[in-house]
Length: 268
Image 1 (cartoon, helix red, strand yellow):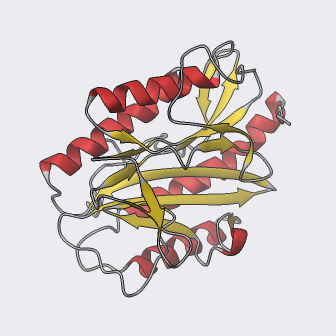
Image 2 (cartoon, rainbow, N blue to C red):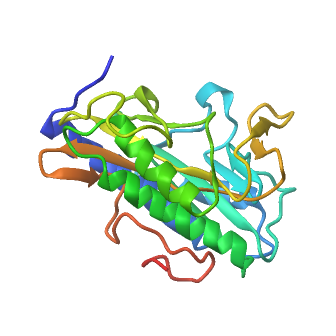
């Protein structure tokens, strides 16, 4: 069942969205060679709790951490670990979620650790642009197929694979609500977008094929071909005036692509 939000409820979701973005931005600014991913997780949890929120991921379905940290060929659901030390040239996907006053904010970004390859940078730039294309299609009267088609057509035009097994979702008082929001589809098909729907649009795009499998830890999803993947996400409200990004803080809805710059504003 679709859970349509009132204007007041959409406004009430913004603090959770802002806090999830702040945590994402601060973690991104820490990404540099030699940093272990458990430290990223500790900082994210500290920021969320310091600002009166609760990490949305920790304990969710048994997940053991406050962020998902997925490196290189890891698509999603990477588990932070002291044993995972970031290396020069990695690309690092961070997914953060925060609960504030019972509402969830959920967003993700793939950051550069040092200077990745030209191929990996291109993948990240196009995946970010796929997110923007999907958001632009999220207007009343369009359908979920229009959102998926916008993402898929841009990704495939650049020769990339679009993950099929993991998709976006509705967001509200629960982190995962109906409907599912695939990153592929046919224009004009699927659930009609209505004012008051809130969805997470989250392209997961691969440098090679989209086939994947789950590691023995039962969480981390990796590409079958070992090539890199990127993941970008914002939580969006469908309004009469078009899509409104709820995962935005004082510096907006986007992060710096380059990790570890010491500056956590802007977009490159």
